[in-house]
View (cartoon, rainbow, N blue to C red):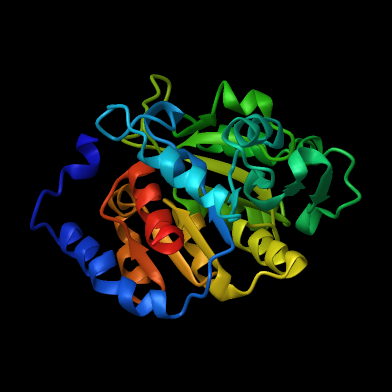
Length: 303
């Protein structure tokens, strides 16, 4: 929590958050929405609180606010769809426990309906004929190259990296532009994607911050999966909102009627302030983590 609040009241980042707040932007954004039928949401750092706990707020106090917002949205027939870097196996249990039926796993590789009754797979540039996408990516040698080239700066995100179905998962801090330039030269078809800040440290890395990274096939992304799902199920842009906390999530803004970035997302990614300024349908919540998530649902779905 402290790292997100270091700027303090009156800081440049705080002023940016106020400029993009519901008080400043919601009247105009809401005018472009109809009845919201679907909420696409990131999980870690967004819908979940500390430690991945749905019921803990940023102060690690128990709160029912996110649960009330979720239950009321589901009661109204709104489809709440997790769109996450988590594997399909991980998401199935999360969705089942929270009453959600459909989800998008591994940053868009898997689109899952009815808790696995139907799965649509997208391997992007590697081709959907891959019997095992994770193995296909590992066999290119790209993961080993990244680990050896950026020693002490990136590592597998254990233990969660042990439960992957499609894309290798790392933690660390690297120059993403540089990494992807090297991947373009040596492993065309693959890209490293930043999926946001991790609220933890690693004794084996020499970095000041940890971020989650996914080694992905080109042509696969969260926003593309959302666009495909909207087309497949007939959701209009005005009927869809999205909520997230990272640069990978901000791209939702191009597909849905309104995108809400929870406040910690801006504080963890201050470089996104300029991009948000140019996206009129993006709102930064007053609340952090799951309370910011609840705020977004309350505004767009429940009011």
